[in-house]
Length: 404
Image (cartoon, rainbow, N blue to C red; front, top):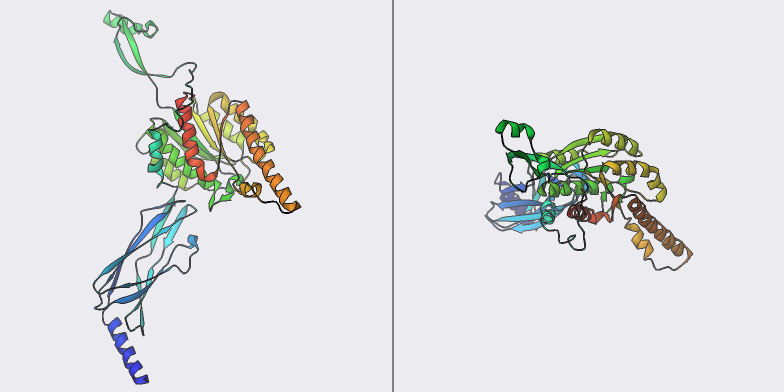
């Protein structure tokens, strides 16, 4: 038996090692990863052996996923190929290093194993969630979520953009007479204007330590970053100007609101580099710089988080000052962990205390909404996972009502 087994081992080794490259692999990675989304990775393996092989495939994933034994087992018939797909969901932006693919190969005898190290190491960048842009594109053309029950408000004044000089005809507004052109042509000439449709919309991201709270694997900062990319895309599709900036102790990542082909790339690159410095956010700096640099009335979408009325009151004076020259929309978050405590089946005194405290914090959030409304500041209180959709709906509502 020992002799037979020894002979079979040599035969098995000869079959596996006689060909230099009998297993061929091709790995298909996306050009970049989308943060918070399921990214599809595909691997195609071809068997050039003259017999069926049994494979154990170990993928060397980036350390961010913390999967140290990511293994697939499969079998492939002779001269055939097999495609394996799997999804990865990154939860932070940055650099992701994909290593080699290690394949342990066995013949039908399964006495000897041959190791193949295939696929080159690849470095990918993880950007804010861009895979959901198409999903929210639809909202740019359908206002069904906000078109009912809204009232269009007449705006005081108007914003007009010069188009051309033309001859005066009966019914034209005499206030637009161009006297210089009239003198040159010896007939009445008027300036013709069109309503300016491109309104500036700035997404302002708070990078303070309050935005480092985690929900479902992502920080509030990452939720805000993903929402900024999606709403900027919708804003541009609605013919408005999209811009952004971030702040904590100082203003950074400034992208001036424009409507041009490269605007989404500029915003995406700026969002990719946003990181918190764990400082207390300085709203006075935000007000000073915005007052100096944003001279036209704009929609300011501020992503931040207030947990208590005291937290709001410390910054309310700056928000009111911004609201004098701009339409301010404050977007902050519900603490979804409190829902579990609120609905907890109380079995003892400690459970009662937890439930009451959870209800108190949830009530504080509603008070913050009412306080902002009292000073004419728009707000969105949303769950982190619903942030993008709720913010886009609010933008479309404000646009439908003609508030900016």
